[in-house]
Image (cartoon, rainbow, N blue to C red; front, side, top):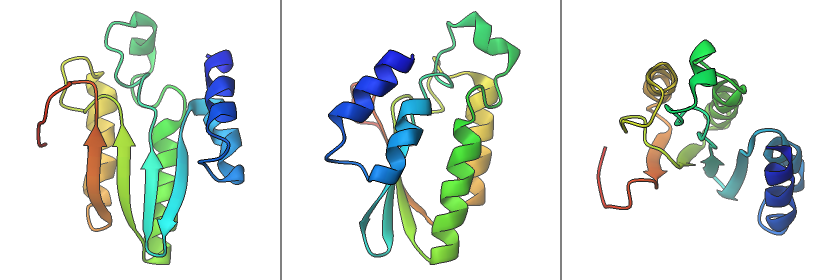
Length: 130
């Protein structure tokens, strides 16, 4: 996956903060302050949303550290008094999401529900509200 994350980081150089390039290259995630008080957190949940990759069943909780990284981003936002929009590909309630990863993701979301003001997902190719 390194080749893909490297290509993403190179393509997004003008859109993401320079201090987030390393995170994109490692796990495909980034955080950007949109304007004072609002942060955008883009979560690459391809591993947590890949229920057909049987190797991921060994560690469903946080295979690449994405949830640990997300918690840090949310704690930083909370401490600063900011609110957050989260972008990700596969919604946790989707049948293709790993159950263990999805349960932990929603534990994180519930903990930070006071600052998460929007979650936006793709994958389903339809308009749905969760």
